[in-house]
Image (cartoon, rainbow, N blue to C red; front, side, top):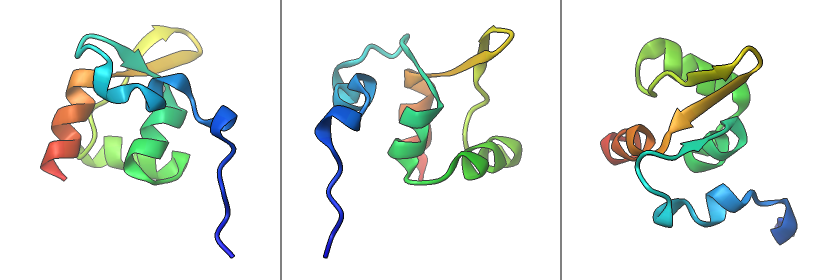
Amino acid sequence: MAQRTDPSAIPDALKNFDSLPDSANVRQPVVQALFGCSAATVWRMVKRGTLPAPRKLSERISAWNVGQLRKALAAS
């Protein structure tokens, strides 16, 4: 039987990704959902250069630019 995702567990940034401006930033859970991969795979993709590197917003917060993610999704 297929598992169903609780709609409240889906981040708003992912639900509204298509309407976000290219200048917006999203956090790692959204990137994982967009590419359908784990956190470790996200960082492997960054290291390989297939995914843009995130921006450091603070010491403990990194975020990816939506415009750059859209280009990476189009290329994959």
